[in-house]
Image (cartoon, rainbow, N blue to C red; front, side, top):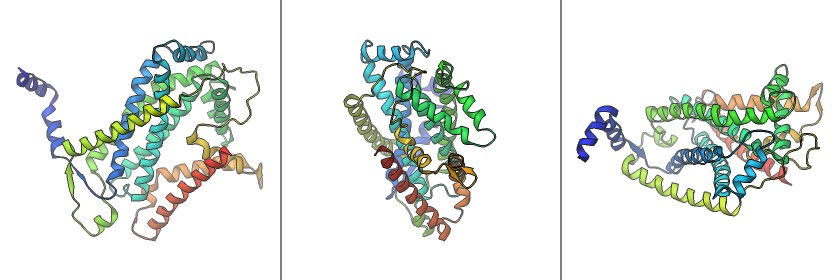
Length: 353
């Protein structure tokens, strides 16, 4: 009976091709193999967000009058609602953290080198979508803190010449942050971004399987034979151990450090003092603060935003600039990765002081 069901399913879905691929696929085993686990960790946290997000949608009401009250109800009246919201919030932070670590490890190891340029670029787009997930989700509790932070965040694009005011108005759904902004952010958060993320994930995973996993530069240059282990079951079982550890850490943090909920936002009230964005935007926030009001005849904020956009473009097209990873230029670009990490840490800590 079991064999007959397997045959029936295989005739329709071609499952044997998938199992054959998994059993024949191998994973290189070297000193950088540990960074391979960050990719599957991102998938794990995204899956957790999807599941908990569906649960929250059942009770959340994205309206000016009910948003804050519905979140309060989830936290106080719905069985286990507080832990579901906490897990959803922390899984978002964990996912973004692992996307950063994943891309930085690829940058330092230069795993984006030919022919993996598109793999890198799709990964960078996944980072941008993950950050936009965090940005749009931050407003949904509609409390004083999220309202004021969103007002500041959506006002930053206004510094971009020509299109800045239009971008700010597009994000807000008007001139200011209102109930229309809340509805817009909710729709983007639960409808548009998941579609884009699923498509990009599919493309990214396909490219990883198509191009294979990159070897360390020295092994590739010296044509060394690198030890390999079967993807199934050896590497998958190792990944499952990592997943269990990460789930344990996630739930521990979610239980002991649940996100707070302030009173419902008052659009007429002044912004609270000391407004700061989420941790993954802190270094950008502090960068904007250290620029003077004017640099020559240009607004300091405009110059800062343009420099950030330039850095983003350079980051996106990094594989094309670092086309000789073993040369002097390649070493300089690797050094820039460490400089960026140090700069982001210093700016983030500075913003909290």
